[in-house]
Image (cartoon, rainbow, N blue to C red):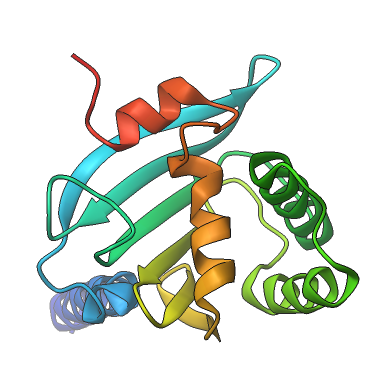
Length: 181
């Protein structure tokens, strides 16, 4: 009887492990429905004053990424950051790269959209933004669709934080675009 119970427990644990793996694979593939042919173009880490903030990965069906084709930017956070801080930092960087302030209405709209797209993050939280030309973008949190933003101007401005030559981290940009030797 004990041997039968032990085998049943082992079988149950194996079934649960396989089901968990399947659920994790399905959750991680959410954004891939938008970019089924995407391959890793490049990756790198972003640190601020020596503290690791996140690991970034750029995925695309094409090796040369630009705003004429879809791509995904995946950020895996290494520390706790509030949604509000993510929104404010993103707005600050958009304004800095743009070289001028956003008008009040646009800033309010973009703040609201990012507040719906982002969450409070902690070590291991993954936010993936998918850029879709002529449409806008979609944001996934840990593989699940969080929010769709149908605003082409916002999408380009947001992803320019990492991809524009005026980015705050030129080394990360080069690593993401696969430009490092």
